[in-house]
Amino acid sequence: MKRFNTTGKCIASQHYMVRIDRQVDAAARLVEEGMYFCINRGRQYGKTTTLAFLKQHLEAKGYAVLSISFEGLPDSAFESLESLLHASVERMAFPLKWKGIKNLSEPSARLLREAQPVEVIDYKLLFASMCANDRIALFIDEVDQAGNYPQFVKFLGLLREMYLTRDEIPSFQSVVLAGVYDVKNLKLKMRPEEQHQYNSPWNIAAPFDAEMSLQTDGIAEMLAEYKADHSMQFDEQAVAQLIFDYTSGYPFLVSRLCQIIDESQLTWDKGGVLKAVNNLLKERNTLFDDIDKKLNQFPNLAQTLQAILYGGQRIAFNYYDQDVNLASMFNIIVEDKGAIAIKCRIFETWLYNYFTASEKASPIYANGENDKNRFVHEGYLDMRHLIERFAIHFNEIYRPEKDERFVEEQGRKIFLTYLRPIINGVGNYYCEARTRDLTRTDVIVDYLGRQYIIELKIWRGERYNGQGKQQLADYLELYHQNEGYLVSFCFNKGKQTGVREVSVGDKKIYEAII
Image (cartoon, rainbow, N blue to C red; front, side):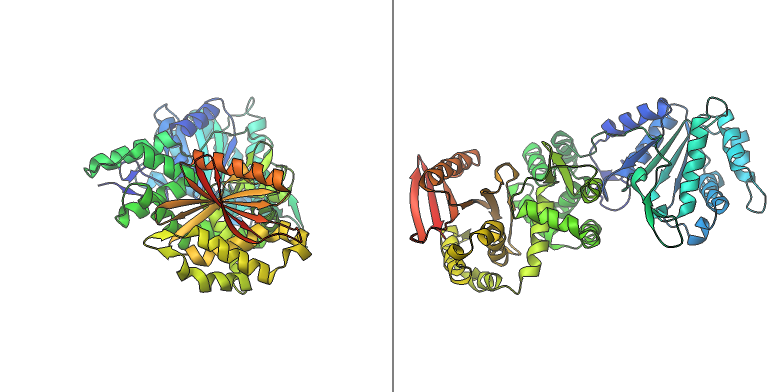
């Protein structure tokens, strides 16, 4: 019986997986055109699996594929260009010891076998001689492992030289590098004083822009196979859409949610998916650990993400901004109409939890912790009471009329800090990117299978406030909800605080004035 896999490459005969024909076909076209290129995506984004399927695809067309990985190579392999080349050739030749290499002729196989470390080897001649016999594609996985070694630059330089002279000397049909970092942007230690510079020995690389995110139809097809194998009944299209809504097709997150539902015997419906999301957000895994590492390594990136999440700022997506470039390579962010956007809801909620963790000592977090048992009645969350209590605590602690700028910058963060201990462990939340700006944010809370829509808004007068209620009513219609909640941060000295109920058409809105 197949299973869902979140470690290592996926094997079609063993694992449930979404078909990846799109990116394999795109990569195969580049190989057939003789291009050298990089497959760089975030952690656990299906790079190694793509290489494995690309290898099968090319072998079926008569190519010989030599595959190596820099993962696990000892430091000694990087002492010199010769030691790195020898270690690479050893890994290229390894399959010859037990199963052979498809489409590799005996003369080429003999050249690989006879390459010994005690001999002085002209590796460029070795590769040229092999390529004169066969159409060979070279795959190099986990290139990030070599990022701090100057000898890696020389290795790339040798491959680049072969590419540039291939009209005169036989060369690889294609060289495909795979890793998180775009090789053109690897920071390398090039000098004894540990100065860093960008390396550009790979400016020959063709762009590989194929979409590697998993799409709803592909997820549904995978779930249909699972459903048939387990003789189950559920709406795979609806479940696939919900999984995509939370993951934006990030391969690891898609597989992990399915794995949690399967192994925890949750239901394949909205309730089961939301429980799986909640379980995923509470666990430690290599993907979240890697994001944590990046946020600590690049503090400016952390500040930028907080400005987007809490401040509603629209920050232009600038590829030449180092932090933006790196976050894009890590697939934490994406470009959305020229601006930075968080990749997916799960990342967004994880980031909210990550940033609010530093607020656990704040009085508003303590108030949320103390109040959390007040709001759950017969399996539903009393959101009206929740925003009412939040308004009371906020006015006691922060005095918004005395510091308007503080409230504009921090109001959203303070509300989410109060909310987190109340729903922690049971529900989750995210902010709707389509409505997030400097004056307005819609928070979507998923709790015990029900959704709650809360709009956070800066008061800009009665007319503007009335427009806001209509916007919220329209948004409730989109989400098929009849009740919504509005938290208005008001700076008028004569304001009347508290919660009031208003109707907009057939929608009921509870508004807390702060």
